[in-house]
Picture 1 (cartoon, helix red, strand yellow):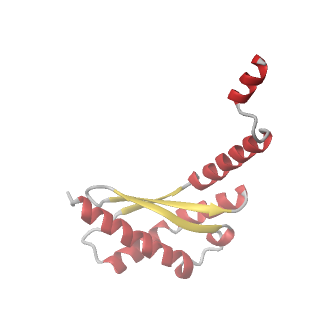
Picture 2 (cartoon, rainbow, N blue to C red):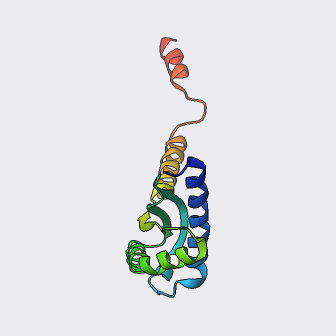
Length: 133
């Protein structure tokens, strides 16, 4: 079992290399259908498995195409990682869509909508004081 420091270093290396592969090496047109960025890489403690979280900007169809392209390119990406990283065993990789940015954006828009609906200066305490008068 690798130390947590080694796991985090391998995770950072995988994230960097996959970002480079997405920019320059993967030729599948489906991967280019949506704007893709690697948000996180979760490597297991024994360095045998890696979950690669990607954020995809675009329509739902573009996201589906991009995920299909990434899934099809898994073997190529794993082989390239093995050559570039020089690990004894290259981890099995799995691409997962990271929707946290979209959820955060949706939450911010709801907060902004609520703040716009409220009148400035009319808090609950002020309403109570006005009702007593």
